[in-house]
Length: 526
Image (cartoon, rainbow, N blue to C red):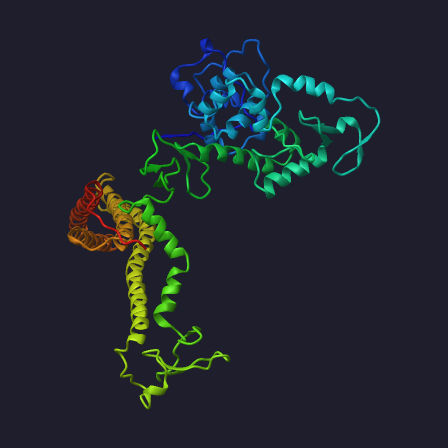
């Protein structure tokens, strides 16, 4: 696992690397905060010499000053690493950096596909598909579309007259005033969320706006930041080895060596599943957790409650709820007014005077309705059983995270009772184990909800119950007041219990993973 380092970032793409004989060591070449940061306008780190000037060759766009930096530096340096946009690739195809970025974006940042298309000989078709002007023809296009005029000319968007020097445009030749350009780009970025696919504002022109033009014409730093994020996000979303950290206000990207449903930890401390982006959820798989979250968020359980506690009129099928003890129901639908029995849903006339009792329980026409209601009620009760325990452990986990502050105070009290700093570290270790057990137990109820009953599921439930009981005992120990007399006693109990919790948690997870490997688990499709 490799993580990016924080640092400044210029909004334009950095210039290409110097030739190989001037390259730094391999360790510095692969660092996201090394040459890439220096190329973006940052000072070289201590102990490193500035890179030598590039040998004569095609000129590259100059980076903007560091004052236009953004906070997505870690993710942007991932783009400059050897897994994404790198300088050696740009030197091979010999294009301006911003054009290379558009080409890579068109191919979802797949360098191999772009290289294959680039060298198949049909460059005109390639550039047309990517909606850019062939750089080799830019000088000719610029000469054909340049006209000198000392008189004011109207902008084709706002129709106001401005001097010719106030107009700017792309290589397609369409020019508009700078004010219209700025408002157009701001609208596309801030309101429509477009970054890499902003085209020329001229009607029918699909030439894409390059990065240098965007950063030159936009003056609002917030818009620049949003544009930089959109470009970077495109790269991250297309790279299987990169994932945004889901923690609020964290702008880091986590990089792995190979994609898998494994726990990863960001520099900010957040641990999450690299496959689905949720908090690490062992032992339940991503597929079932996704279904569970959807089930908790949508109205499926509301429908179950309605099915379990209401019935439909047998004539007009309007949903009704019983509000009294009498079984004689009268539909309130003005176009129906049907009278029927709440128990068997049959017509009321045959019931005679059986106001509170029904002797028609075995009728075939009512049995199906009663069975459907019983199934809905059973499904609701089963869901509530697992959901309540899932939510209870989630709530307890939040409380246990707050327990760190209380434990810190207890550790200070223990040090006042002639205990060293090392000797009181068992309390922090106990809280760490407690939080791990709470998280594991929380997700075991998701796993159990979709699990079919068999011999292995019984073993799993026994392991779950054992871990749950031990976790509650450990939580009780940590919430006790500590006195001088009970100091050594509580220390021994806490240490014994958190070690037992660790071992039981390990046994539970090993059993579940063994079931995955041997295909022992059977699931209930929701």
